[in-house]
Image (cartoon, rainbow, N blue to C red):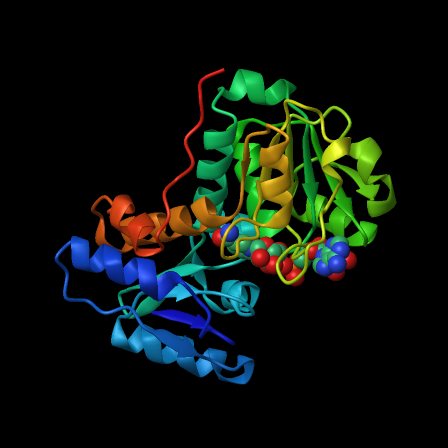
Length: 274
Ligand code: NAP
């Protein structure tokens, strides 16, 4: 199941349903719309039922505060997107970090020695930016710049996660990306409009681009970056990979990723070696 408010738009039932079917499991995966004031009672009920599932907006941070048994990564990020029951209590976990890690690895396949030297610029300082920051830290990235319109929020995020980062204002976005090896958008820009976090012309020609936003087709920013010849991905791989990591946490078997991608009529982008 997936808990959210609203939750009708969630694609998780589509690809988790396909994964369960491919794995030959009879478990069902459903949406449950939970208003914020019902979150406490809902989590208590799910613990008593021994249920497992996902949690999406706006409950991820609240769930991390309510679920006392959280995995270290969920504690680090301060958000729960995956849970299961053990001994009558819920365990909270975060697989958004796995989703971000898989996407960054696909875009920049070098190891930690390369990562250490590669400047990364991250737009946004909200819940998903926290997951990206933890993924970057664990992959070995050390030169992180946060670009936000609310600088205090970005500074607080860096301090809370204990991940050093340079913080720059949105007005300095062109300057911030000038030598970036990877640029990541963790704001809603491009979700309901055609706005770009930063102009494609400002990006270095060989930088990789990761937009957490996804929508039918590509986001306009990612389409423009690809047209300019850059390695660029929207948030679909992150979405599928967070779901695959959740599936593996629940069932302890490899997730049928191919079926998950197929259920969305999509395929993971592949890149030439260079
Ligand atoms: P959030 O917690 O609300 O944070 C949003 C961040 O974006 C904040 O730093 C906010 O700045 C900034 N922002 C909002 N509107 C902006 C604008 N018009 N211009 C510049 N900055 C703006 O949201 P979130 O949970 O991090 O999610 C961000 C986006 O990531 C979502 O819209 C979703 O599309 C995407 N997402 C994708 C996945 C995936 O699996 N692919 C997973 C999670 C999220 P302020 O602090 O100034 O308000």
